[in-house]
Image 1 (cartoon, rainbow, N blue to C red):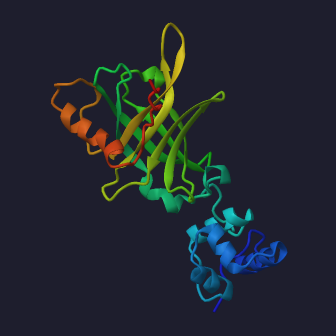
Image 2: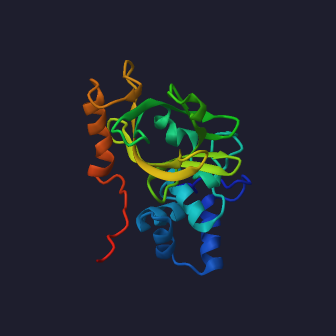
Image 3: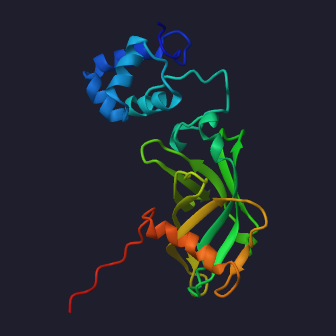
Length: 248
């Protein structure tokens, strides 16, 4: 049997760091397992050296205890910062690629906007990054970072331009790689006024040959795209809440 994973200083193993934290904080192993959302059995085997922990388990324990348990110096730039979820490139590699992106037109005409979102590892930032392309309104194409926290089970595409945020919250990919969720952004109103809006959003792995642009009602792909986009709400991937009616 061997102790799991070296600590960041390369000397003290992760199991010893965890035992020290349990003693210092007067936490039971059951309490830590609940905090980190790992099974008590897995935690017991980790601490006894009977099992080498998965990276996901170590990440959850790091977040629960707010300490570092993994040695990252051997692979610089391969682990995202904590504020993006502390995920490793290997853990999210399946998410890299190009996606057909569908969302309702902000005009309320029933049209659907279809464009491409690319998700790739950004070595300079040490995280997944995304960028939009082939948008009709190219001046408004977004680019930003991807957050993949383990607690919520969701994927966040975040744009931050000088403090102005735009965010998509998506489900983890389904068996065919689809992701569904909601987009929160700003819409141009009267004159130069910007209004907060939210809309359902769907990302599907790009196959090639898909129709892009503004897909109006009656166009060949409109019905199929609308059916896909409806899944975001109909299958409860996202809920668009409305105010309750005012009593008479």
